[in-house]
Image (tube, rainbow, N blue to C red):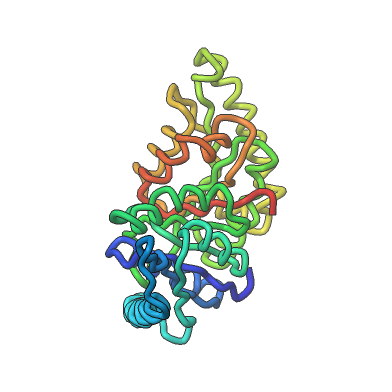
Length: 288
């Protein structure tokens, strides 16, 4: 990722604005720029009432004030030299963000907000973005601080081809930061049955992980630790437990996969993982 333009949609809530801190980490890492974005609903007059030009004038004034506020907020987290002119628009939040994301290289947003647009942006819109965005999406947890470093990464795989698509992004981050990474595979007894069978699968998984490290992380393999977790929990619960019991700075994961781990990112399990883990989550679209 060379000099990316990073889109940061925000509802201007305290939590939403903290996405700028996460975005700034990656802007510095890749020498990119950040474009703040806010979407509001178009001024619509009640049926039978006609006020020519008033809606247009009001929208212009709203945009002016929001732009000034966005710039003020962004400067609290982002170096001014890396900040683009804010993008202010009206319409459906998800559609506008998705459309604008196709002109950028990375999207960073949080998952919690207030009501109306704010609730939509930081709830259902975030979930839709990880499903439909063609560019990588980072879900910020709103707790990262400006100037933070990425020192420890979790990478997950279910051994599907789709899950491998997150490896190049993870390897590049390791290369640039010198971060340590855990490459994790979950063996869930929900799908295998007995612990004995789980141990057999774990041994095979260790061999597969070693092969993947050699082939996908060869130049940074000394920074990549291999881990197989045999558990009675479902994969997304097991991953959440691993993350929340350790100090990770980033989870890197592919959006789709073949097994339960992969499918979790297109169902309710995805919402659970994204909402409950404490670190930012980078979601990669395997189709691009």
